[in-house]
Length: 55
Image (cartoon, rainbow, N blue to C red; front, side, top):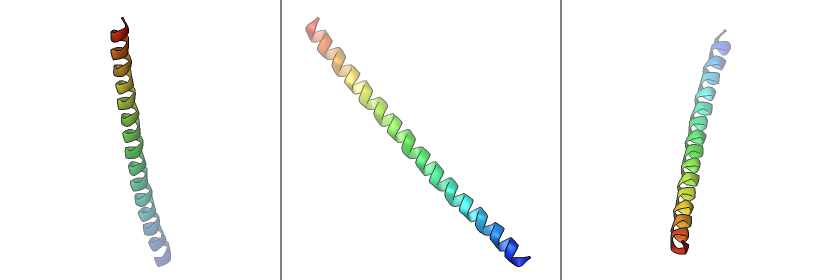
């Protein structure tokens, strides 16, 4: 009985670690998406500038 209780406690700790890893991964993914958006916005601005010079 005591072993079973200990095991369930350990499983809870594992899930907490997994959740922490998941949130960290989500944060990295969001940061990457933000980075991609800022890069595309920069290139869009550069394209508009070059078109304005041409036109």
